Length: 150
Image 1 (cartoon, rainbow, N blue to C red):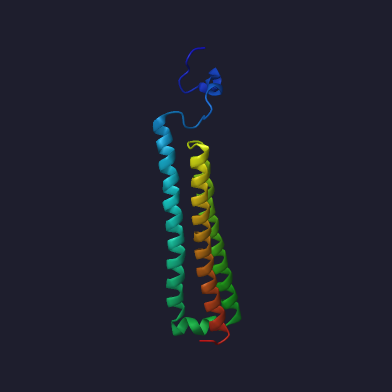
Image 2: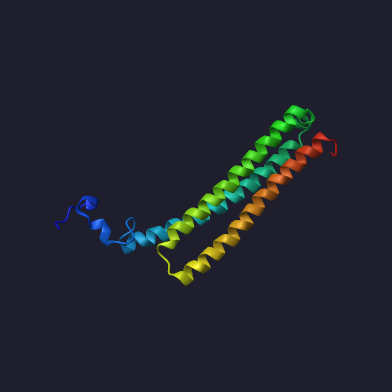
């Protein structure tokens, strides 16, 4: 069979290799680097969710906004937006987790992969707990302002 260059599918050379997407050693290191970039991205998403919640709590303490939150429509609208934002952050963190596991599963052996999955799973749970905590913090703040606790 002759070599076709980029047309490996036509020549049938793709059947000889087990991993179609990453064939060379440098591609494998690129795959590991991408997995670590997803780890960093997941940390950034979590930190941004926490920072946004803290900034929101300082912004809500303004007297002008406290008067608006006492209206039911505004309180419900803000509550829904905060819930959607928290859901988005949790989905983004899970997206990073799942794609990193997919990338690493083709480059690691079984023992190393089990350790990698365990570390990622535990840290992913912690990130999700942090996002949920700060989302609930903002929700409780809005409800407490609306019902006159502050």
